[in-house]
Length: 154
Image (cartoon, helix red, strand yellow):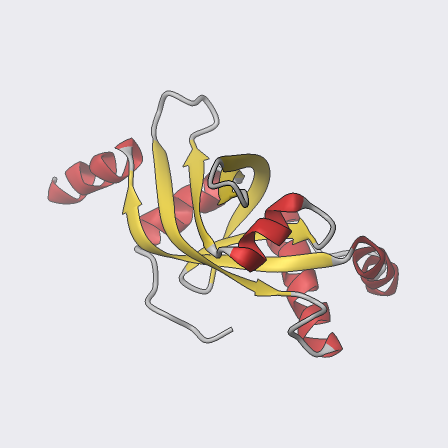
């Protein structure tokens, strides 16, 4: 994936420190579909692992508009919402080596460790039809952003 504008370091740190999120995609009838996801900072945006057999993947193929809410673990100390279009690396648009590397990056980023057996990991993610998703936001808002701005003024 091409590298775009970077997120502010404070935003990347917030994502890193709070790896839980809610992805909103849109059903065919226009209604939102919410999914709990694990997130990580990736290529100037929010990275997420999904699978090809889930509706969120099908929704995003049809309509890449989405948002991701990332909340502080206690829910009350701030949140960020990222809005934009999903970029997907999957079996239908990527060569096997690019997809393999993207899947491995997801594992390392979300678990903060390396696999003990990458060959086994590759077999599992291929069987799962894992997809690497990146949302490079067009807009970011939320209470955590306001707190970051205030902290930078001091």
